[in-house]
Amino acid sequence: MLIDFHAHIFADALAPRARAVLMENSHGAYTHCTDMTLGGLTAYMDAHGVDKSVVLPIVTKQRQTETINKWAASINDGEKIVAFGGIFPHTDDYKRDIDLVVSLGLKGIKLHPEYQEFVADEKELFPVYEYALDKGLIIVWHAGYDPIGTPPYRSDPFMFARIAGAFPGCGDRLVAAHLGGQSQWEDVYDTLAGREIMLDTSMASKYCPQGLFEAIVEKHGADRVLFASDSPWSDAAEEKARLETYSFTAEEKEMIFHANAERVLGIKR
Image (tube, rainbow, N blue to C red):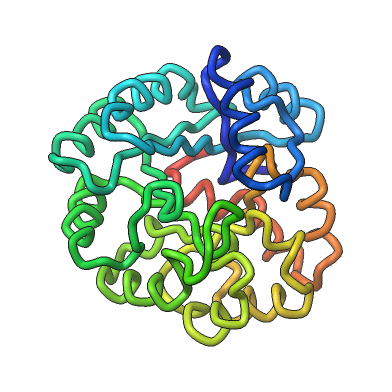
């Protein structure tokens, strides 16, 4: 069983243009392993043994909120695709937008500090986080470096440590992507590992040195780590193959590859 907790696609009509823009904005930093359509993702999953993918849309303008969330609901089959929703962080009515996500049966929201231009731990957003959590939603944040951003980045392990501390008891529904901070992994080990928050592995096994990756997981606990690829920018099959060679026990790999995601998503088998 393999659950990829971090994938991106677009509606078929939008995917070619979105892919081209994202490639341009990233200055060629990444290649892509799907065409960013639903069909492209499911074909990849079938070919490479990915049982479920969590699709994470990003609302970059307030006016996109309803359209993106309704599209997410339309692809959310609960079997192969678990689609999250999204909100624009500085919305004029966060309760309305979060209520929409909940009404559509979506399990969580994705936030991206760089694309949405907000600082992850700014106090004005804590009521937004609290309301989403009170409604039972999972919150996934991009964490750390992104090719479109410039230092200092709008999210880092120190910020996520503060967020985790502000919402005790919610650790299964707080998810910092990229192992807590892309290219900030020494700070993750020192500051965030061991806190009450989930870390997804997207891009991390590709760029984080193996010894540091293993040390972070050991300190944080394998029960709080979610396998993820950041598809299409990283290849889930390659990421899994790499992690298979790491020094985790068979039980720890089961937790990382699917059991933790099943717990967080409320999936029963």
